Image (cartoon, rainbow, N blue to C red; front, side, top):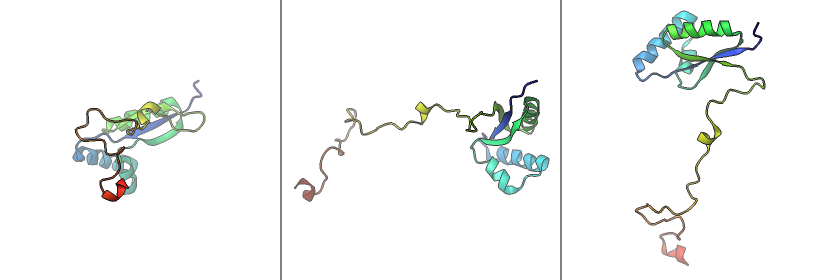
Length: 122
């Protein structure tokens, strides 16, 4: 028997507002959720619906959510308790925009010159 535990993650990926509200209404009717919880589900961020459950129960919940029109997936629960990182750190890294002069810029680079006021030149 598989002793590994899983979690079901839901995300609101709807282009049309009508479709998102219809899925929210189905969630409300099926699970008895209140308006605040429906608003959290519609935030566009991944929300963990259920965690620390066996795979067969997670797959059953996934099928149920997909049957009402939602988008979700099943992932294993990390051992250290941290969330599963779907993005790589390289995608999150901010670029250094002040590394050097932009050669293709139409305007002169103002960041390396003194200000425009006459008092800045003194």
